[in-house]
Amino acid sequence: MTAFIRNQWYVAAYGREVGRELLGRTVLGEPILLYRTEGGQAVAMSERCVHRRFPLSQAPSRLEGDRVVCGYHGFTYGPDGGCVFVPGQQRIPRTARLKTYPVVEQDSFVWVWIGDHEPGDALPPRAPWMDSPDYTVVSGMEPIDGDYGLLVDNLMDLSHETYLHGGYIGTPEVAETPITTEVDDTAGVVHVSRHMDDAECPPFYAKSTGIEGRITRWQDIEYLAPGLYLLHSRIAPVGAPGPDPDGSDPHAFHVEVVYGITPSTEKTVYDFWAVARDFALDDQEVTDFLHGNNHTVVMQDVVALNVLQKSLDTEPAGYQELSINIDTGGLAARRILARMAEEQAAKAQEEAAKQVRAAVR
Image (cartoon, rainbow, N blue to C red):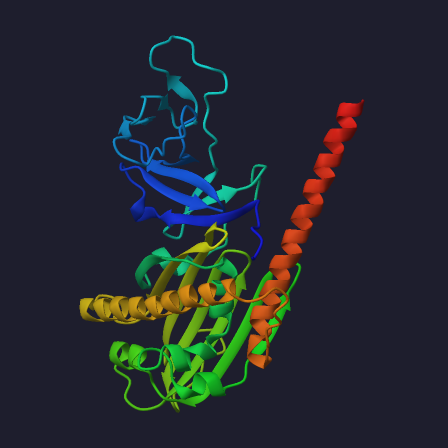
């Protein structure tokens, strides 16, 4: 199992999902309730009532103004998690309080901070294309019944597009073209690049851009551990000029693929996916095509990873997997996640030791 990395920002929902209906999500094993106050502020708090642990996202629980009323016995909570009403008595127990989570709304996502201390100045990583007027976005979310590390592996090695997504996004050149990998261990960032100078144009791009014939295709991955994956894609007809010295690139089409990777439980993960494009911005036909096509690709991954998790669950202890060159980026991501988990464990031990010393005094 890939260890949970706490004291990090994770995508809990799209902003459009959080409203005046109570929404429940489980993030890193913690049931979280999401809703929006009458003033428009997103709130995240523990989803289980302190009384008998009834899920507050479950009807007949409801909102009254900005307060959440438990649908089982009527315990009522304010946006700060404090209980403001207990049935049958005036005194509210001191422990009648729900845990709340820091929230940041950024780039169309609602991010929650999962950890044992406040985030301080730490902000979620950026995906600015998600709400930029220069891009049109299609997006969705699919739950996967697998360890979140399997989704990281899947996204870091795009050679699987050739075989799993043939006829949609994959072509032979994706698997045939070598990759280059750069790792910033300190920042927890992995870059994997695959530049194809002369490749078949898959239907995903042929039908959305109108390109006929072969293409130059760049795939530049940027994984920001633990929970955000970006794929910077550049598509141009073979022979078209490359980017200009000033960074502009008027002869190419650009697609930014964004994944929020949010561990739910030990063997489930939320796959928040989005495709942002800088062409045909107002063409609804292109929008509908890319949404449907990419959803099909995502579901192919979902099915494969669900099957893979079941297969791994039957493997004997000590099984040694085989890795090759195309796994370089994925292995780097695993190392970063393992290091983050080790540092987290060491810090927890240090804090526990401090508490013991303080108690002895």
